[in-house]
Image (cartoon, rainbow, N blue to C red; front, side, top):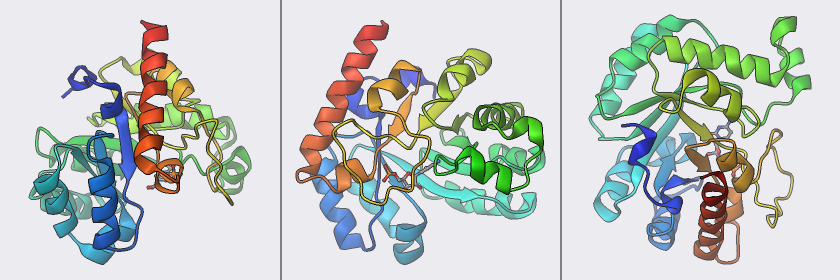
Length: 247
Ligand code: C5P
């Protein structure tokens, strides 16, 4: 799959099912299944409910499925986890790319052809200060340099794309080409108000898409809106405008 397979603006919206039960997840799946393109299942829901949540999405929607467990372990363990994930018919899976290429190659090589392996570059919750404090060498302490370095590791290991902030997507697309998928989390529409937000390197939907993002992850601005379906529609409209402006 390349980003040519994306057709409509709302299909670029990834909604993370960051909820604590299958009943809550069902509520959002039914509310949003026609207004977003991808449901993302992360650590909380998968640890609580297991693979049945993936089956539920597949049975009840036409949305793509993103299993976001951000694998990070020795290559053999990642390879085996990846093979186990293949049984669930998922479209996207994530692996950290802050180590060496062996772990990423293990994930890329053991994944079914139609599952996209995405490397996590630099979490959008991290600021430059956090990066410095984590002991990263000086020339990579700028989030952009670090994201580019990790995107290169992902690219040369055979990953299909990366996850990075809306500020880093443009140079990543320029260097690695349009078919290298870029997913941007840390997206905050100008109208959203998130209390105690942990995201640091944020962008609006318009900025992220205008910079070249294939997909954006939008969680709390949709989940916590008075009307989540309307919030998702507003975001799709903003994506459509950004695409029209850039075409
Ligand atoms: O929009 P919001 O901040 O609520 O989105 C949170 C979601 O984005 C979580 O599911 C988190 O795992 C995901 N995320 C990500 N990569 C990042 C930052 C957040 O996938 N760098």
